[in-house]
Image (tube, rainbow, N blue to C red; front, side, top):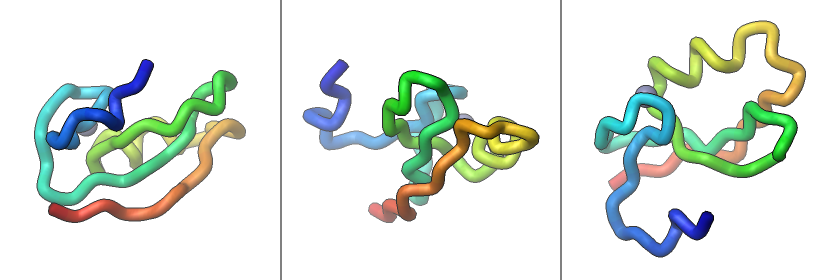
Length: 58
Ligand SMILES: [Zn+2]
């Protein structure tokens, strides 16, 4: 579960490494994950679990 120990940030939805990531919650587990902009726009749609936690840049 401790994915923050990795120095490489990648989108946990599409598993691709991006230079700009968005810290979000989108599941009932309220787990913070990093998402790319594209996946963010998909998962936040009509999602009551969606929460934005900040932008992370390399
Ligand atoms: Zn993605």
